[in-house]
Image (cartoon, rainbow, N blue to C red):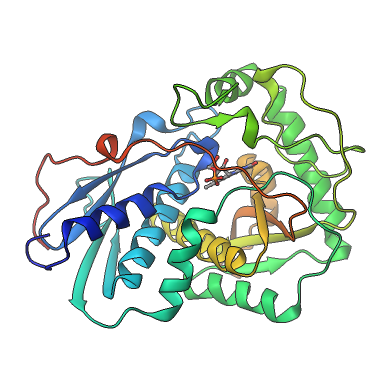
Length: 329
Ligand SMILES: Cc1cc2nc3c(=O)[nH]c(=O)nc-3n(C[C@H](O)[C@H](O)[C@H](O)COP(=O)(O)O)c2cc1C
């Protein structure tokens, strides 16, 4: 990056961190363009889930998570960043421009979060029946707030309702042959020869009593391993943004990833359970326009009984584009 003096190997490491971000069905819908003082994060629309995500909301949430990883990796390398989301009305594929500031001292908080990036995975396996300390919950809420979002723990009085809605959403989605076909196209028996999507080894076991409606990812893979016991009191969080524009979706992804990396630092595991946000009537039900809060995803958190498995990533060479050259700020 000629104008910033950031060495190429540092830029490469930051792009790798961005590419390690979570994305819906592991679609990795991002491309990166390195300019003289900024990295552009572009949308690869060929990777949008046409059935599940017709508006591209979850695609942009995924992009936001990559933007956050990019920010935190540059922060850990001693560079402040400033972000413009959807900066060019004429170019809707330019999701964010991350401009690199002057060199400074690496921020300790950014270093801790950046160090957590390689070990952050989706854990779809059982969690311990153990409460999360109040201070840690506060830290997670604070992480969301720093990104302009809010994270709300679903208390015992509402939890059964949210689980029931999620179960209904899951049944509705799965009853659609187009949904099942799309999911099957993104799930694979193994990651051999495939660097995106969900290989069988990342898909967790079935719950014994079906009480926890995690997304059933195994539809295209035939019979799964036997059923196991999951935690009896799952801890569920709802992530809200103050609006519902593409810019809010990107910010939701940044908040999701700050929360997720903070949880990782604290030894917590995370599973997004987004099904109810994918049925518009259910999303509307949980939207409070007067209070400016729109649900973007549901997260299950807890202390893992088993470690999560890593999912594959596309090589950087496929993600870095050079044309057309970035316009200057
Ligand atoms: C917007 C979004 C929605 C997601 N929804 C779900 C979900 O409903 N169920 C699930 O098991 N995983 C969900 N995930 C997790 C992705 O499947 C996961 O990030 C991806 O497969 C990459 O794996 P990794 O997180 O282990 O790196 C979601 C991720 C994102 C970013």
